[in-house]
Image (cartoon, rainbow, N blue to C red):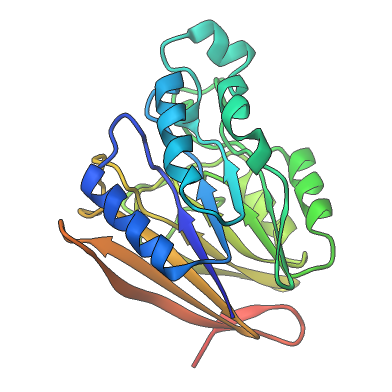
Length: 263
């Protein structure tokens, strides 16, 4: 059995100290096999915020895969946001961007954020199909986990609707691949959605936020338990004092590599 914690939208600079402390206690006690951090570690992309985020993650002595989000670009420096939007992120987290082996699973990251885009809402995600092909190549033939910040398709129950450029195309590319889990954030809410195609299927999981920038009412993060052919997903939601578990679903991997709701 392998346990993974999925966190997103830590937003250091607007973090919730109580939720951060309680989450750290729960994660440390559970001793997971890995942490997946799905972007927006900072609020304004400031050095002090990156230092705080790194310091918080450094307390966990487990493998980590970290990808950037749209808030991880320098908000107050327009030139840097266009010319080198992720230089600060790389300075602090480049050593946590490599693919991870977690038992028989292999996880790889994909940057869906942009410092600037030719559309009004530059915070929305954008997928490079060339970069997606590289990530799929890094995963190879192992059961795969793809980690990014923006959901490829809008989650059914999320408090924020998303419009990720080339997300639908990317979703169709992933379906026939060995990737069975796509982890993301951005929407500040936990969800689990199956996406099925004639050539394959995968499970899209979003995580909540540990900041004060709430959209579903409570800070939260997610737990994924991989046990043989089963996948169990739980959202841990903060009530102001502690985190309480809420099951998002149980799923089963088929012999053909597909994934479906467990009965």
